[in-house]
Length: 323
Figure 1 (cartoon, helix red, strand yellow):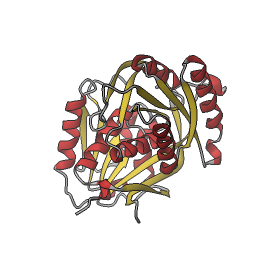
Figure 2 (cartoon, helix red, strand yellow):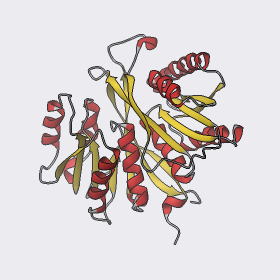
Figure 3 (tube, one colour):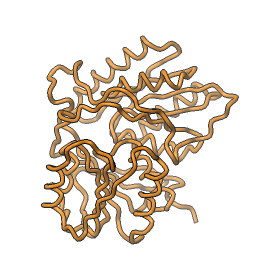
């Protein structure tokens, strides 16, 4: 029997999904957007809600905790600490929680505030456990980023890179006799893209900025183009491309172009645009197992002014590509 994860894509709908009798995966981080889903959906109807956070989090999460306590049935809420310093232990923790959950229940995965590496680990666990056909990924669209700055060129979300490594489940197959091509999906975290590229030292680079189909997010396009322009000036043997953030096929097509341009290169993806395009880049790697994803955690976050939530949500379900 051919499983869905062997040949799948994502189908998008507007709005929040129904949480009735679902297993919900949330990230409790420094953003108030961490609780947006439970404030806009029927959270009390969920079967279980797993609230994940880093065990050594240094941020004040008290306001989020109050909101989660108010919105959730505490008998159904389970707080899960994950280890920032160990991908493998984080992977084991997540896999245990999902593997022991009722396999007949829908899983609602709120990707909005998850760190990209943890988001990737969860997606890999769901794929490896053949649970993709039960997954709904939901995202709250931000109204603004770096809210303390009105000038786009001065907005920032994070700075510095603590370490760079491939992500479990997305390590690809890199041949030592081949040169390296890196594709960076660029957003506000362009400084981290710069540092990751410096560390990886590839022979070929593609910097791709995100376009959009949403009128209210058109202001982000110029920021991405400017960031890519600076990156192109810094690195030799680099070229630019673009993709539509909300369109998985557009992300895949951009990555296909990169592979076609350098077919004799190993391919490493650095997804530093938004969580939506990160989901699509990860999907590409799950279908092309020789491609690697590298991630570099930030040293500093603009935690006090990171983002402003909106009332707009999207959600995606995995479907067969032949459907």
